[in-house]
Length: 331
Image (tube, rainbow, N blue to C red; front, top):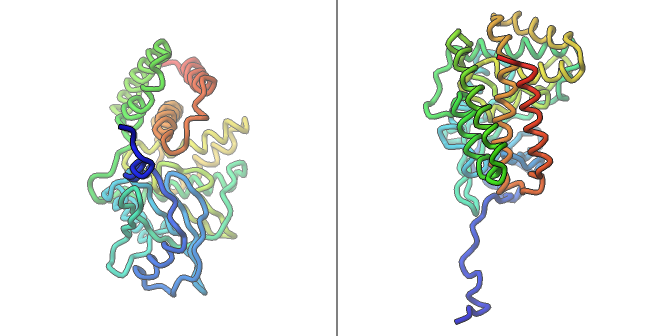
């Protein structure tokens, strides 16, 4: 028997990702934090997490609402504890504001299920400019300070690690369905993954530096305001090989075709903390690993961001980049 109009769609469809009302979040924050009563909340950006600007009469804050299923409570606890640890040691980060209950994260109910939120102080400034040698040196010194201050961090357990499983195994699992009709390319990717695994395993055995990393040390996450600088967005942080954090500076130096910016960055880092030649030599390897991880993340995000960008031409482009990297960096 055909379903009636009243019964079609009677059960609510599953929500993958909702956009929460700024007005509702305004009230939630007002109840949870002992700050001057917020008067305005504005959605700034939708992304892996959603970012809102919150205003009181005298202050501004940034409210991050984590996507459901993207981070576990343990993941968020680690990130916020690391920020607090760095702030205590004088690293200029934007740390989370404790709620009235002393917690750094705030539960928020959404149509797709419970989500977590955190309130951060607002940081002034413009993104750092990599093609300025002075600012590249500043960024290097800043990353050295972050790594040095985090060396003794013993945060909550359960946070993901930036290891071979994170950089190789999970991405391969995420992208496999999209290569079902491209068996030769899938065989190449599997072979590439094993070659990269062998190389990073050998490099790690030789003594690569390991410890808490920022995970995404790009210019947009480093704000410069007059003489002040602030590092933002530790959402991708975790224990990993420290050379992974050096990638953005190297990419920019290559893009400009000049080693001066890279040399300035390395010099700045070594002003704050030792950096071995072994770690420097491993940076190109982490470039390939980062691109493999990025392709896996891209495919994992399709249910939220849509599949229109995953064209055969895009996959051809990424595969050509991997093959070019292998030619440029033989074992």
